[in-house]
Image (cartoon, rainbow, N blue to C red; front, top):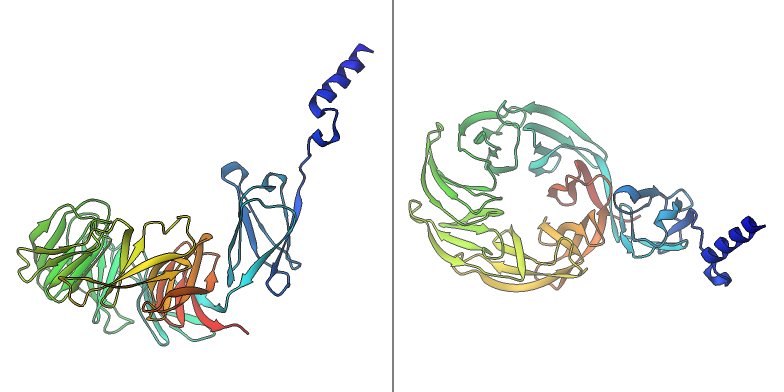
Length: 401
């Protein structure tokens, strides 16, 4: 009898005498995803959690998915290609709406690497391992015509540039290699420059080469080179992180952190570069070039708490005195412009979703019109609107049916 009474006491202590205090037993629960027109969304991903309690489920043809009990009332993100991702602070057994994008990206086929040259029906890419690829494509398919590993020492390519028909490749620790791709199916090594170090952004003008350091505050190194590969360092500048670098006339423009947005050197005398402008902008963290403009990226981009971000446009037509033209907003974290009217970036509620946006840098805003949410780890690899390389795949931006 005492054992029975004791057991009842323990049960009462755990549950309380009021039914409202009975412990809730959590069980797997069902979530349904529909579009704005009420149709079930098949293939939508629902994911959340961290480490040991992370989960990822896909909706079925009825737009439904079963989530484990650990997901209940936890944060989650819901996404699918050509839909606008949503963030849910406390997911539960209910129906959520994913909005279809205004336009859509149509998958054409697989490609590898970043675009070297992208034009109608022809695409040349270089991948990080130093493999050169030549493709032909149309609206239905993409075909690899030629591929070649360019050189035993070209095995890590963080940066490249195409100048005329010359492909310049910066490598990690193996210098810079220059190839002629006048015949796209037969790249020819012209010369190499054994510049030391873990190379990053670089710029070329005539017989001058400038190399920056993305990870350390300098040096920015200036070289003169000959077509036979002879080269020598002629000057260097300390204390600049370099994310982007370009020549505009006799000026070298660096983009780094907030204390270098931008920094402009007069390089009329490349043996003695002279700072003529240094932009300090503590509201912006970096930027990217577009034509003769520099687009400054706000500090709360890439993971901030604001879904609508304002970008500043600087006019570089007079590099010695950059001028603020205007600002525009965007509903994604922008990383580049493909044309005057098309931008690309990462969508606010899910940074693995690549978004294409339409607008104009002279107008008030860019708005997301299409997305790719799966297999995007390699990001944007190139653009020739309406064609885009996203996540090592070729896509075309089209109207919705």
